Structures are given as structure tokens and as C-alpha cells.
Length: 214
Image (cartoon, rainbow, N blue to C red; front, side, top):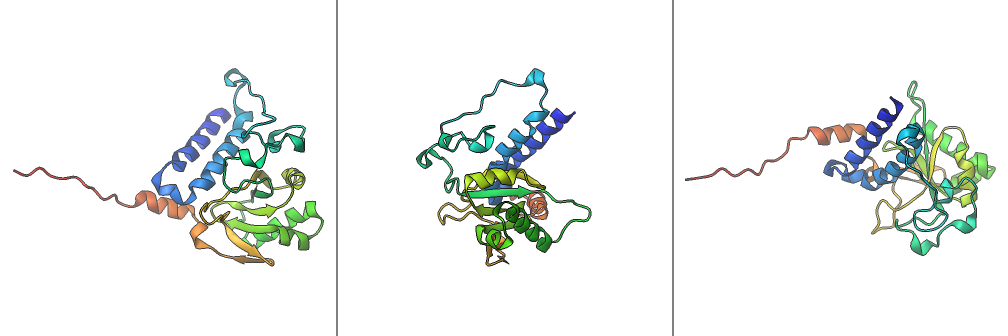
């Protein structure tokens, strides 16, 4: 049952990733599809698992997947395929209870406290957070070292810590709402809610059928 659920979850994300109605969050969903596959691999029965071995070099390697991280194993930045992925900007995805669901301010406050738990102070955490999201996903972007990114993975409520990459490549923008001096600066162009997704699916399609004449 768990394996089937995992496959359905991954299939749903991959399907939506390549749907034209989801182009606004395409890069974001690409980011999470691979993470979800890695997260759900523990649910796959042994009988259907394929032997895997984590890379310790090459463009597909990440020290986050290394059980014994060695910073010398990381590939040179020139080999990284995703624009903006520099192992200095990190995307931290967190989970929150739905009943009651916290407010946006409460979630942002939790982001700051979570990062402060590894940096030592909330003041330093607020300096290092460059973006937040409480709609498309719940998480934040932080400019920290690889060592701190590993420590963040062990904090309560943290689902994933991934190397961040540009959502808007031409403008070298990581997306999300900006977080400057402890204040959130909303950017609607990077928000994409479930309600917007449903509206897109229900929007009638324009038909281009041509009737034969004569």
C-alpha cells in the first residue's frame, strides 16, 4: 500500500510538472520531484528495488546524499547543470500542522527560529534568509555553508534541504517572497496556490476546429 501511494504521489507531481497549466511553478516542481523520489524510496519493497550506489563525484552528486559527507567530494561548480546552484544558496522545505494551520507570520517566525538553531542567533538567521514561501510551498532560502545545511536537515519540521537554483534564470532570481531586514516583501509572480491550479484545470479550452464547407 505504501509503495503504491508513493508511486501515485510521484506520478501526480511529474504529471503536473509537464502540464502547461503548471508552467508558473515548473522549476519548483522539477526541484521537488527528484527529492520526493529519494524520500519515498524507503517505501519501495525490496523485491522491486534496484541496486543503487550514491555517487561521490560527477554532476549528479550531492553531499546531502552522502552518509559520510566529505566536502572534497563535491564536484566543481563548472559541472553543475542547474543555473544558480552553487552550494551556497539552499532551499529549506518545512512542514506544518494543518489543524490548526499556522498564519504566514507564524511560519516565517518558525523559519527564522529553525535557522537560528544552527547559526546561534535569530539576528544572524534573519541576515542569511533571502526568500520565504508560505503558499506555493512552505520554506525559505538561506545563504549558508554546506556544513550548516547538513545540520539543518536534523532540525524539527525540516523535510528537505536542497541546493537552490534560479526560478527566473534570465534575472538570476531564486523566486519566493523577498526577506529583507526581517520583513517579507510579497512577490505575487512567484506565488501559485492550489486554487489557481484548480482554476487553470477548469478553464474552458478554446477549440480551433474548422468545419468543412462545400
